Image (cartoon, rainbow over all chains, first blue to last red):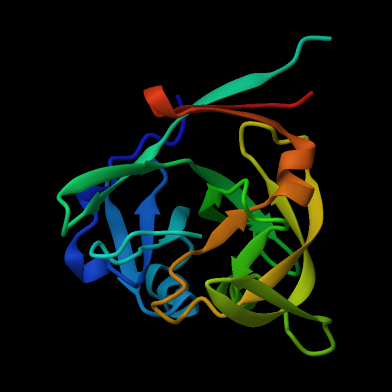
Length: 62
Length: 143
């Protein structure tokens, strides 16, 4: 199985509406920032998965 | 020839107000253009006609909006952006490079909280996708 991720086990309220870099095995948050480019600068060349975290008090309809 | 098939789990998201856990079909994809690849967690969205990405991704992989055709995404309100070509690879299918025009829109504002929506015209046309929501599983295969 790929991509197994229990998001709320590692994503906290401080990450909402921000870009988050998680480790490739999805076990930890490597960094987060309001800007994706700034986040890449912060974490250097580390191989990560980026995701934009939606707020947890809204229903998503995309 | 044998069809390759991969199984994925839906990804959970907790809704604070209703105290409900929602599950979404998120898929890791590698995206590149002038630079990259960078890996993003993308939503597989059968309701989206073309693939849509945050304009911040364009910036990260070296795409400038200068000289690009404009594009507007309409849903709950309109979002203006631009169209540019990218390469998308699902790591489990490394030989199947999806080269496609995507619409880059402003993803900074909190009312548009996504990074990538994988849409019908490129992603669904290329891969066979089966959702099993009752098990929170989905499957990708390449016909």
